[in-house]
Length: 360
Image 1 (spheres, rainbow, N blue to C red):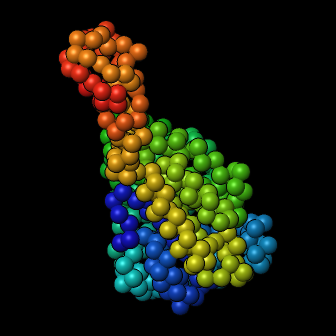
Image 2: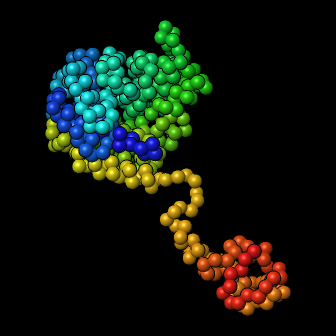
């Protein structure tokens, strides 16, 4: 693992940028690891289960050369189930984590049982598919939820479904009322505290001025782990999200942004992914501690930059201290300036020359 306990997890979202080619998927794994990402993520789906034969492609998908039908595009981009074990093994060998978004419960069970995947990522398009969310939650793995296109109530309902799945027996009948009740229970707080909820804008690329990173504050207030799935161009938005409190960043990775395909255009190439990772580590270091106290780099400058109380005239023992004979100056020592108020009117206990430190 490249991630430390105090850092933000960087997920290199290979997604379907392998274009249905296992060798390309393995190249993406290696590129993610070389770039320093913590996790590489793909998408696992059954094309025939995911979309009907007549489902249209999105405008950005059609513009990327995918034609008019989703089913045709999905079949081109799908990898056989046998490929995922090979990809997971290669990911482990590279020293990073494997993750793949399942679009159906059978794919999720396969990924858990056959690759050892220990988390479940849910894409934005499935956030309102509460029956699927319930099936996934009942697999008992920590979850990451992307929330593109969602309202806050839809996010709460998704979280309630996750809580309901963890807290109830498999034979308990779900309902919208039941999942909303589950969301409000004290027991749900523990479950949701380890659930990652990712702000996301489902556009490829997403406009920078619609990133709405303040939503991260809203998610933090829900008691979940805030994250950001970034579809904007470049790395600025992702780095800003870390500064805003994102604990997980997901960013698409491609070997070549000029290739035809639905997600290449909104992806980073390997060199750019490395830039993002380095930037993310720096931002995380910059965030530091929420405790305000002098840090190591500045301690040595305190005596030089701060003022202390000194004698500005000769003072003899028994003289009365006043602003006529003591004042705050940079002198490398002396009582803090705030002590001036208490010292005024007191009697000097000894002689002071000009420039001598005044102590309390």
